[in-house]
Amino acid sequence: MPKLSIVVPCYNEEETIPLFYPAVEKVVKQMPVDTEYWFVNDGSSDGTLAELRKLHEQDPEQVHYVSFSRNFGKEAGLYAGLQAATGDYVVVMDADLQDPPEYLPEMYKAISTGEYDCVGMRRTDRKGEAKFKSFLSNQFYNVINKISDTKIVSGARDYRMMTRQMVDAVLSLTEYNRFSKGIFNWVGFKTKYLPYKNVERVAGTTDWSTWKLFKYAIDGITDFSEAPLAIATWAGGLTAFISIIGMIIVIIRKIIEPASSAFGWASMVCIILFLGGIQLLCLGIVGRYIGRIYMQTKKRPIYIIKEKK
Ligand code: UDP
Ligand code: MG
Image (cartoon, rainbow, N blue to C red; front, side, top):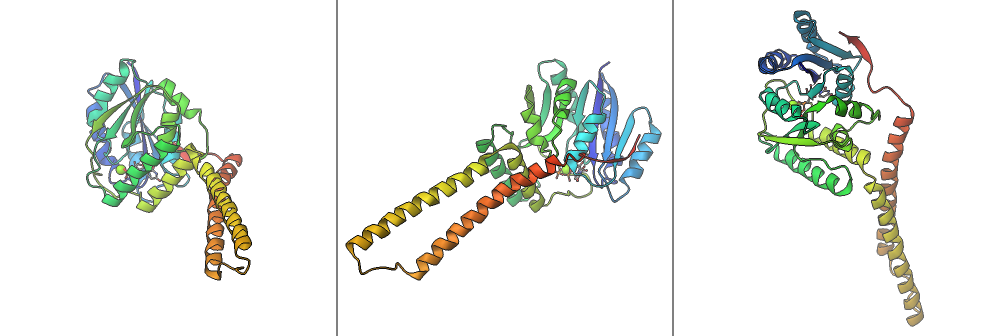
């Protein structure tokens, strides 16, 4: 029988893990696969690790976990889980049951035909989410799909089942800043998306504030597009062009009307502030990319393991 690995990044999920495990077990028991679980404790400050130890003791053959030395973020957790997984197929799920296990048989059915390398879930609504947050998310997908060659499907979650081949491809990208939504698409292969209705967390709270999501979006854009650099170049070019026109106007006016020498202090201040602002903005954009180069050249590990079973 083929083996299915279930990778679950967990950060402060002590309330959800005891609900998650039986819910998934109930479904996978009916499927024609052997299973293994890889929980990744991402430096939780609550009893998540204790819950994982308990599960491992109950079923040491099937349930495994990796525990980080501190919080490294969900992307690092995903990477560690994918590295540890040994299955022919690997599915990535959130611990909070927002990725409904009921869809696992359907996903498996689609992927086991061999026609697809990956089956992902795409939510068709954002029920239960703040309006402003949904609006920002939609804008993010619009922008990144316009400026990046890597297309990201709107509403696609990280809930996806992949073949061993695709997992190895994802693992071959060892970059330090990991924007999984982009990486899953960048590696190519054939992905099928199954639509479903949004489900809210069973317990606990989300760790993603609007501000954190916003920063995540900016990181995604800088990781998968060079368009902001092009915008900086264009802004520079455009202001230079406008200033040349301005100079010509001043010279012509001087010739026609020699008495007028000054255009006024206020307009001067506006121009100086405007140019200063554009310069700082462009510097900031360049700086973001340099920062990412800096982090990458340090070649720091993506995560550090404290305990693995
Ligand atoms: N998570 C993680 N590390 C973090 C934040 C989150 O491993 O630093 C895990 C979390 O335990 C959950 C998944 O990532 O299994 C998704 O997190 P959450 O439910 O908070 O995000 P949302 O569903 O709102 O996108
Ligand atoms: Mg969630």
